Image (tube, rainbow, N blue to C red; front, side, top):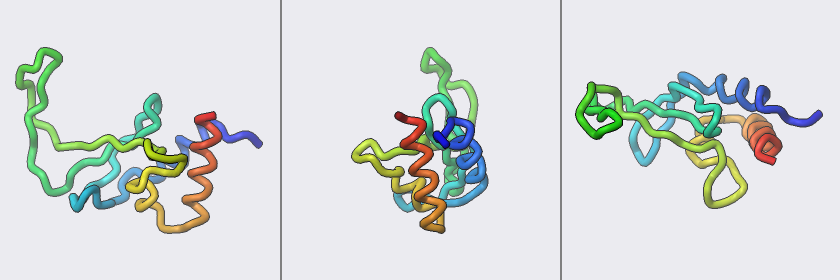
Length: 104
């Protein structure tokens, strides 16, 4: 059966709440970005940062976040941070197959 976007999203949503280190910074998966095929990580150590509005003016204080693509921009593999979130090799391989299948 052909992998679908719904299969990929269901697998990615299972990662919400998991913790990982991004460049030594402890983070937690807080959101899945469907259109971008990416995950959003919240910095667990940083305080609030000022978020600007569309004009660049300071708007409000928010948690510092990072967006990480599902696939590595360097090769046809899962992004290393995403791969580190998944302990079991079989689960990593399944996610990789889904991501490759959805991407085309």
